[in-house]
Image (tube, rainbow, N blue to C red; front, side):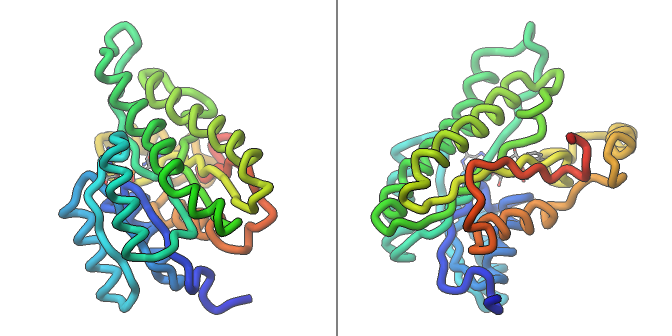
Length: 249
Ligand SMILES: NC(=O)c1ccc[n+]([C@@H]2O[C@H](COP(=O)([O-])OP(=O)(O)OC[C@H]3O[C@@H](n4cnc5c(N)ncnc54)[C@H](O)[C@@H]3O)[C@@H](O)[C@H]2O)c1
């Protein structure tokens, strides 16, 4: 086996300024990849890239709104100019706008679908042509266990994450002849800014529902992404890897 799993590869990570995306960018860089961190939060992305560079790896920050095709195209052009080739795409950027259906506004529905699902479409469309030409690539999208089992108050979020799963399976079939692997990860409850809003009581109630008795760390998801980005998973496509401490089985 190679010493570094991603030596000579370049990866794009959306939402890489914080939480799971940041941990994925760090894990990829630690295994030799050059990393393009694309985020709405440009300051956060710059900090994440600086941190990676201070460890001697290659990273660059880009300001992007994944839901906006124009912004995605501009960033894709720049990233391809800077890195030459993008081998790995991680669609990670995501938001929540929770509400019960009777109170859910058009805006709450549209915002979540635009970022979580259209964002995946936009970035995939921007980077797939290069992968098709080279007949190789890895696309990993971060779904959620909520897209599999549902969650009261998250109809918009669950729909977007279930959409990612259908998108992943369709694209896996479409791109397999060109040796592009397309997979999703469905994290359970992971300790990030997104779950910070939960109170201690809610967190301990959640832990009781998790066979491994703890919330996940961003690094737990990052290690799975590393596996799916590396040649260790070359014979795996169209799958949803559930990383949730055993909550859904
Ligand atoms: N934390 C969890 O428990 C959990 C569980 C399952 C799935 N997920 C998914 O994992 C992914 C990462 O979540 P996280 O917990 O790290 O969240 P987070 O809020 O800590 O980080 C999300 C990042 O995405 C960026 N972002 C938001 N909107 C964007 C946009 N329009 N364009 C570009 N970047 C944008 C944010 O600036 C932020 O840096 C999301 O897709 C989320 O749905 C998280």
